[in-house]
Amino acid sequence: MRKSLLTYVAVFVVAVALTAVVAAVLVSINNRKQEASEFPLRVVEIAENETDPSVWGQNFPRQYNTFVRTEEGGHRRSAAPYSGKRRSTAGCGCG
Image (cartoon, rainbow, N blue to C red; front, top):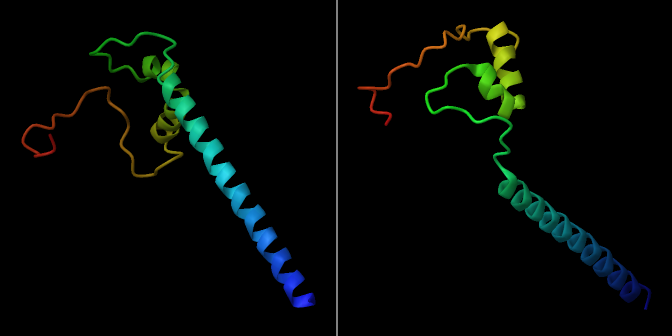
């Protein structure tokens, strides 16, 4: 009788844990779907040929902050400073 009770308790605890994990995953999926429907939240319109990072930074502040740290040498030591010019990908086979 004692062994049977422990088995039922163990099954109950495992079921509760699995239910909590499934609920957390479903909430996460729902949050991601909501975020995806709101993206991109545009603060300013960006021209198609705009290359100024500070303009892009208004719409993408986290990425811009990372870019600035990279430019300052705080993120990667080997990164070359940003020149503002686009590099040509012609002939590289990358699209």
